[in-house]
Amino acid sequence: MKKEKALEFLPKFPELSDKLQTKLRQQLRPFVLYNHSGKARCTHCEAEFELDKAVKHKEKDVCPVCGRKSTYIDCVYRYAGCTVESVANVMVFLAGEDNNLYIRCFAQKMFFRHGELVPIIDQMETQRYVVTPDGSARYGVDWYWTKEKGWYQKHYKTEWTVRTKISDPVFLNQYAYTSINTAALRKTFLKYSGADRMKFDDDLSLFDYIRFYAKYPGVERLAKCGLMQIVKCAVNRYSGYYRKNYYYHPSEDTGDIQWKENEVHKMLGVTRLALRYIRAGKVGYTSYKHAVVEFPNMSEERRIAYAKATDNRYTLLGNLAEWTDKPKTKILDYIIKHGIELHDYRDYLRICIEELGYDVTDRVVAFPPHFAAAHDRVISAEAAIRQEQLEKRNAELAAKFEKLKNERKSLEFQHGDYIIIQPRSAAEIIAEGKILSHCVGGYAERHMNGATTIMFLRERSAPDKPFYTIEVSNSLKLVQCRGYKNNWEESGGSPKPKEIKELEKLYQLHLDAERQKREKRKKSAIKQKESIKIGA
Image (cartoon, rainbow, N blue to C red; front, side):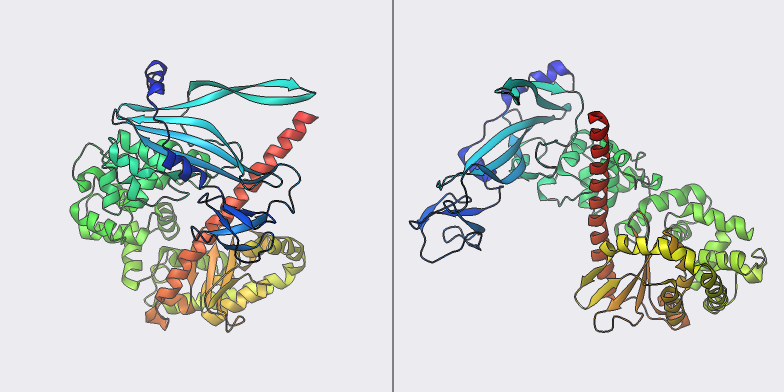
C-alpha cells in the first residue's frame, strides 16, 4: 500500500471501549494487593474487598471475587519505592466502519507503590496496522532523546508515521505478545477467513495468516480441509519467515499453488485421489508433487505409493540409485515389497560399502531376498568392527564427549511412565543396538563427535533396560524412533504402539522449545558481542 493511501486510514482507527480497556489490563499478571488494615484489591477484576483470612506476602491463592489464581502482595511490608511487577504486550483487533481490520499494539507495565492498593499501569501504544482487501500498512511513532538533570530521557512523538516494512510487532520489554478481541474479524472483510477459530503457534502467527488471507482468500479452503502444514508453508513463505530461520527446507516450497481456483485439488495441482491421501496424512503434498515430476509416465496409484515411500527424500533416493547402479523405481519397488523405510535401506547399503567393502551393484547384495536377515547380519559384522575401532579411539573422543554430555542434558525428557535419557558411553549405544537388533551401533562414533544425537527411550520402571532408541538431528528434529528389530513384524518386531507415537509428538514439542531457547541465547550473545565492540 502506498504511503499516501495508508495515511488516509489513520483518522479511522477505532477507540478502545471500556470493556476492551479492562480486558487489555487483564493481560498483565494477576495480583491481590492488601494492607495491614485488612483491605485488599485484585488487579485482575479490580474489585476491592475485606480479607477474611490471614495471608502471607507472595502467597499464591485465588481472588475471592473473580476466582483467578493470584499472588498476594503486602503493599506496605515490601515496597518503599516504585517497582515494575508485570509486563505484557497485547495486539487488539478492532473492526472499522469501512469493513477493514484495524489493529492497535500496546506495551504495558504494572508498578506497585508503597502503601497503595491501586497499581500504576503504564500503557504505550507502539504500533498500528490496517488490513484491507487492497493491501496492508504498518504505523509507528518516532522518538528522540533529551538530557534532563544529567540523564538522557527517551520521548515518543505523538504523530504516527507509515513504516516501509510490514512484519510482526516489535515491543519494548519482551518479544511475546497476546491477541485479544479476535471476534472483531467477523465484522470485517475477513469474516470468512476462519482466523478467529483457528489455533496458531510459533510456526504460524495469526497476523501473518490474516495478511495472507487478504491477498489469497483461497487459503481458507485449505485450512478447512485440514491441510494446515501446507497453509503454514505458504503463509511463512509469503511473510519471509523461512528466510529468518535456519531449518527451512526447499521441499516445503508452495509457490506453485493456484489460488484463483475454487476446487482444492485444482488449487494444489493434484488429482482427487492424491488429495484424499494428502488429507488423510498418508502422503506428503510436496513429496507427491516431486513424484509427478520424477515419475511422469506412471499410474496414479503407483505414483502415490512411490511418494509415500520416498517421503520427500528424493536426493537420498538418487544417491541410492547411484550407489547400486539400479533404477529408482526398482529400489522403491523393493522397499515397498519388504515394508522397509528408505533410511533403513540406506543404512544397510552404507554398512555394506563403508564397513564391509561389498559390491552393492551386485543384485543379490543390493536386493537380498530376506532383507531383515541380511540387515541383521551386516549389523553384527559392523558392531564387531566398531567395537575394535572405538577401543582404539576412546581416549581421544572422551574429552569432546564430556562437553557434549552437558549440552545434551536439556534434551532429556520425561512423561508419564517413560523417560528419555542420553547414553553415557559409546559402548552403551553399541549394546543398545545388539539387544534391540537394530543399527544404532553404527551411529556411536557420530554421537560421540557431535554429528548427531542418540537418546534412549526407557520405561520409568526399568531405566536401564533398552526399549526404544531415538535419533535427534543437530537442528533438534526427531529423525527416527526404533524399537526391537526396527518394529518390523516380518522379522519378529512389534508395531509401534499408540502411546509411543504420542510420546514422539510430545518429545518433538520439547525439542522445539529447546531450539527456540538456543536461538534466543545465540542472538543475545551476538548482541552482547556487538555492544562490546561499540563500547570499545
